Length: 90
Image (cartoon, rainbow, N blue to C red; front, side, top):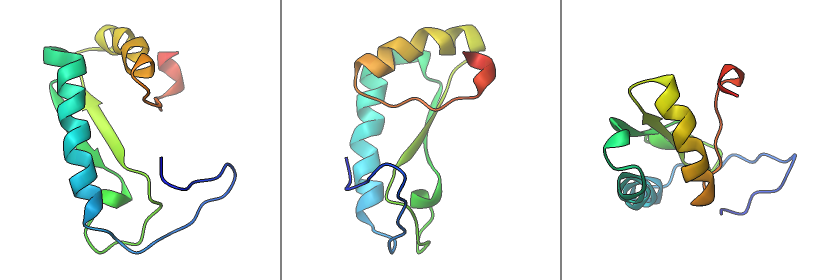
């Protein structure tokens, strides 16, 4: 985890390392989810070159349907991921 503290957000200059950090996570997610994931994308401010950003790498995982998504949440949290999703999925 990057040096982040609860209730405190800081912006930093863009780092080319963010893309480099995303790629192994993408491969890890492919391994964990297999063909459940139909797309894995680097999203958010760290995915935009030259943009000042909070140093958090956001990753969006696309699945075929909501039912599939619900089954992936326990798998991902058990693997150490934090899941942010729309409240209608809970």
